Length: 218
Image (tube, rainbow, N blue to C red; front, top):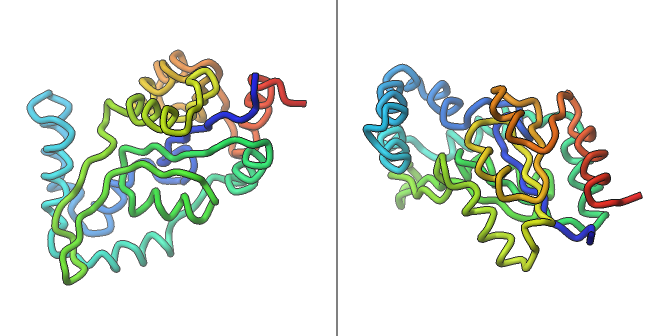
């Protein structure tokens, strides 16, 4: 098996120490409580993910994006040894990606700071004055597998040489199409059950051994 594969990471809880980028911004701006009915409507099946995102971001309309960016730059904390893991994977010839149903304002920063090749997430729309005006949903709650498929196809990497790494229920569709999957500190038993293997660790470097084993790297 060729070591030149694609390693796709979830972001929130997998590479960074936040449970949800959405909740993080809601807490920052004081909109967490007023946003809860939007989540309830989504989980009750009353609205789809795009509408949920639109309703949430409507609570942030007019907020300068610089306020969000500065707070992220000051508060974004990575899982220990994440940068070293990415460096070693790329030295082996792997492509790396973030696939997040969170927000690109987080994912793009993580991509740049860790040196990851690709980032796919949902983009806040910004008006001419630099203020939040809407959202463009690119990664929904239930379509991470489609994003992984499209990225692998564009890079001409077979799905058998793709690895999905995540911790949450919305990572399960990625697990189901990737050749190998790792539930990294999974948040639910069903996430662990859906993955090829489970890693419980405080260090991202502990992901390296199962990856080397799957790709038969000495």
